[in-house]
Length: 321
Image (cartoon, rainbow, N blue to C red; front, top):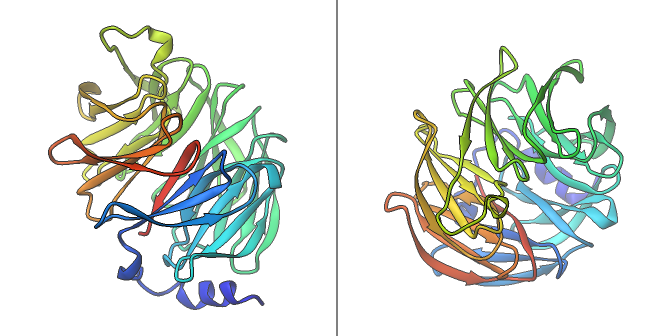
């Protein structure tokens, strides 16, 4: 058994290590690197060389390792958060993009864009448990707070697939607007928010009835509708405020969750993709793919306070739990 797995197994029952709490990892899709950002100094402290076309990225539940989907290498690489070096890889299907893990950090679900499947991986044994057939070009992945329901969005089928994690079967398919890219549960599990890049909306789904119960739309003076393309979503822990990355609109929308209305637009870098909160939720960091930088948003002030230059085409971002 390799060393990272030993560490993962021994750490599953432990609380997240505070030492990693304010270190951010950014996947740079074109330069095939991961930028490491210190969120106290707001500087890049290291650049890690990884495989081809890194996109989806997240910490293991114990905060000891960072997993990054390297799509053109058809695998998930594992970075040791202490040494900041690639130490292992996990099996996946062709062109892995985004992934989600269960609360215990024992099972990983990976969306494979090129073969229309979700791969199920045992993180303890580092083995592939099987595949779930979904729609065309799967991307968005999220799991319900109780761990019973997995949501996958398929870009071309324009659906959110509801998957029972115990049977690994699709129990419902919900049609949303064109090219769904990301899914996010409210922390109270009452709603699932799904962004549609080409549709230009966020669909709000009742996860029990499997119905769209509302939509968030966006309008920015001076911008054409087709330039407003929702992708990443971040929800505050109190479920009161959602932040939505609007792609080539170069803005993040601030949404009042209760009214589903946009209250503010924040100008960030060019072609904003994904985002992550610091553990204390004081800051929200966004990846800006065309300007090759990360914007830092002061959450309380709802204001951009910093820009950090990273690698080429920054795509995903993860901050230790």
